[in-house]
Length: 411
Image: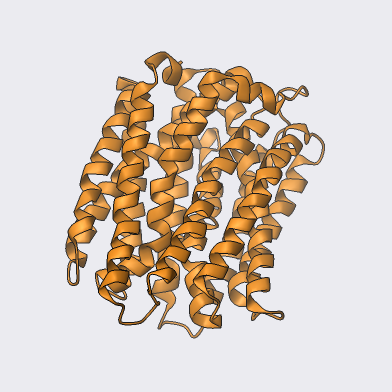
C-alpha cells in the first residue's frame, strides 16, 4: 500500500471510477429515464445511441491520434474534457429539455460520450507508460484501475435507486454529485498527465496489421457484447420478468461489487498461472452460471442475486486481464498507446450501441412496454434477449480465446 501511494495508483482508481460511472450505468438508466419521463420511444432512443456509435467510428481513432500528439498543456486539455463530461451529465439528468427531449438526449449524451472517449483513451494510454516495461506492471496497474472502475459502476448503478424516495429529484442529485466527484478526480490526476514517451506516433494501420493486436481487439469485441446486451435490458428483466421492482439497484451493486472484490484475486492468479488460463476459466464459469437466468420467473430475485455474485465475480477477470493484455501488446508495437486505445474504446462502445440499436426495437416490436402488464410473448422475448443471446456470444468468445496461443496473449 505504501508503494502504491508513492506511485499515485489511487489517483488511477478514482479516475477510473468516474469514467466507468459515466459509461455503463448511463446505458442502463438514460433510455428508461427518457422513456418514462418524457415519453420518448425505445426504438427512437436506440436509433440515437446507434447513430452516436457511427460517429465514434470516425471520432475515437481521431481522438486517439490527438491524444498521442498532445504534448504541451496536456493536463489542462484533459481537465477541460473532464469539465465537459460533468456538464453533460448534469444536462442529461438535471436540466429539463429546452428543446424536444429526443434532441436534448442526443445532444447531451453526445457531449458526455465524446468527453468520455477522449478521457478514456488518454487514461489507458497513460497507463502504458505508467506500468513500465515489466510484464507484471500492467497487471498490477490494471488491478488498481479496474477495481476503481468497478466501484464506480457500483456507485453510479445504485445511486438513482437509493435516492428515489429520499429526495424529490433523484437523477438531478445523482448528476450534481457525479460532477463534484469528477472535479476531485481531475485534481488527483493532474500530475499524472505527462506527455507521451515518444513524439513519433504509430500509424493506426500499423496497429491493425499486427496479428496479435487484431485478435485481441476481436476478442474484446465479442467478449464485451454479452455484458452490453444484458445491461441494456437488465432493468426491464428485473422489473417485468422477475417482477421485483426496487431490486434493480441492489442487484446491480451485488453484481459490480462482486466484480470489484474479485479483481485483485484475478490479478494475483494471472501473475501466477498466466492470463489465458485464468481468463478462460473465468469465462467458462460466467457462461455456465448465467444459464440459470433462462429459467427464472416471478419471485426468483433472491436466486438471481446469487447468480449476480457468481457472474459478477467472473466479469472482474474480463475487465482486469483483457485491457492488461492489450496494454502489454501496445507497449511493444505502439508505446504512445493513443490510437491503439482509440480502437479499444471504439470496440467497447460499439457493443453497447449494437445492443441498444437491436435489442430495444426488438423488445418494443414484441409488444413489451415499461411498467405494464406484458403478454407472455413479450416476456419470452425479454428472456431470450437478456439470457440466451449473451450466453451464446460468451461461448463464441471462449472459442476465440482458446484458439489463441499462450505466446500471443502472454508475451
